[in-house]
Amino acid sequence: MDASSVPVVHGRVEPGFEPVRDAFRRNLTEHGEVGAAVAVHHAGRPVVDLWAGVRDLDSGAPWESDTLAIVFSATKGVTSMVLAHAHSRGLFEYDRPVAHYWPGFARAGKERITVRELLSHRAGLPYLDAELTPALLADHDRLAEALAAQRPVWEPGTRQGYHSVTIGLYAGELLRRVDGRTVGAYLAEELAAPLGLELYIGLPEEIGEERLAPMAGGTWRDLLADPAAVPFGHVVARALPWTTAARTFANPRLRSAGRLADPDYRVVELPHGNGFATARSLAALYGEFAQGSPTLGVGQESLWALEERPDPPTRGEHDVNLKIPTRYSLGLWKPHPAWRFGSDDRAYGTPGAGGSFGFADPATGTGYGYVPNRMGLRIRDDPRDAALRRALADCLKASAS
Image (tube, rainbow, N blue to C red; front, side):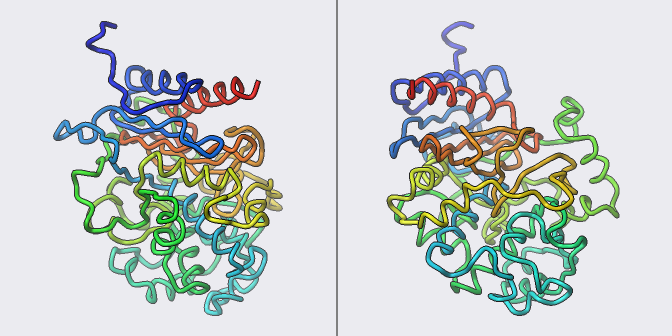
């Protein structure tokens, strides 16, 4: 490769973390990266803050330091940290029934579902019968009524199945009941402002298109080019309209996941999937929690709850919707033999459609954020993200030796 074809990577890395920059550059040449950012907070300071590539394929505009991209389900991890902050303030307990805080939730056989079960994809509420239009999603009272009316599709606590959309909607209403604010408002006031984050759930109208990175790719043609990217059982279940998986992922009715970044959806708060972030903000938030929350003051009991390894559901860790073994706790993914991240089982985070990922590694005091704009198809362990995390793990091992 001649010098003129070497991708330009902007930003900085501290000495000892250069391999992360090397891996990031290789993603542009070997893994089809279009535009992206990656950041790492370690031992209370930013040690990696990089961006490169094209922000918008149509215009050719470059990815800038302040470019924001939708992170899809990586939003769930942010919502979980919002709830952990509220838990630390004594607003609710994870092992109390949701109906204790939201009496209307007790309808349709849901009176015994705990907050922990709800947030761990075990409540049997992976889809909603009511059509999730932007108007309904913006009307919190009407939405709460639809959520309360839903009946579980399996006995709560016995199984787990990815609640792709509903977990955020239920979490949002729970927070509204105990605090009065929405997840997006709580995030802005209690977490983002003190930490100086560019991190939003529901995008403020004053942020213009020139700041945003539209998603590219993610079509059936991409799946045909990489048929092993999505578990076969998941593909089959999604194709059969009567299955739980099909119903879970068919509402709201979207032509593609990228539609959540369109104007009518991005202004609505969707705590499951329309977070907009810079990589440095994801890394800074997870780094705050991984370091023991010195700025926000989240209590140790709440932090331990995020770190502990969950007991499996009575019917095992096979996910009803994703058709793979998974491990969830309090809205977060946890390390599993089928998918390792972080240094040990205390780590937690959430991946997002397209390849985005943020996680905390309490064992090393590290927070990580990766935000791309080419839609990968992997449910987890996107090759671009995996390459960055391998490089980071090597750097952390070297710094500890």
